[in-house]
Image 1 (tube, rainbow, N blue to C red):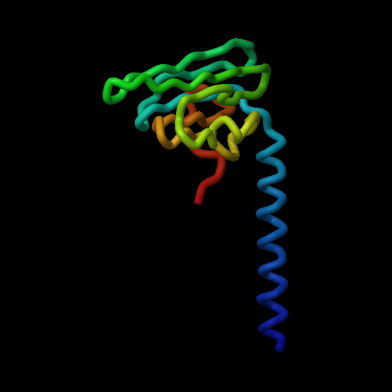
Image 2: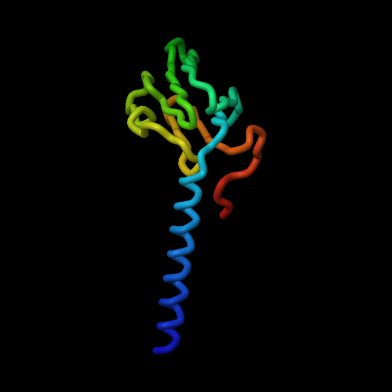
Length: 124
């Protein structure tokens, strides 16, 4: 009986700790967005600038594109010719908690606070 209470309290504290960490990570605005294609860094974008980026590639004689839009402190994929359009529906991202991924085009946008950071926000 006492063992069950101990594990229940331990599990509750662990859940509350995880929720607190996730909450504070979401509140930390990112400074840079690193754009990767096939796990190779192709660009690092300063999120303090407002601009539009076109990423185009040709695969099997078919042109694939992702139109990336940057606003101050956030980034999104505005248009793409991938079949599922999940990357477009993800919308604006402003923290490094969840990356933007276009799986058919093998494109990943990871947000970070430091331009040259080689670490993740969550270590597991």
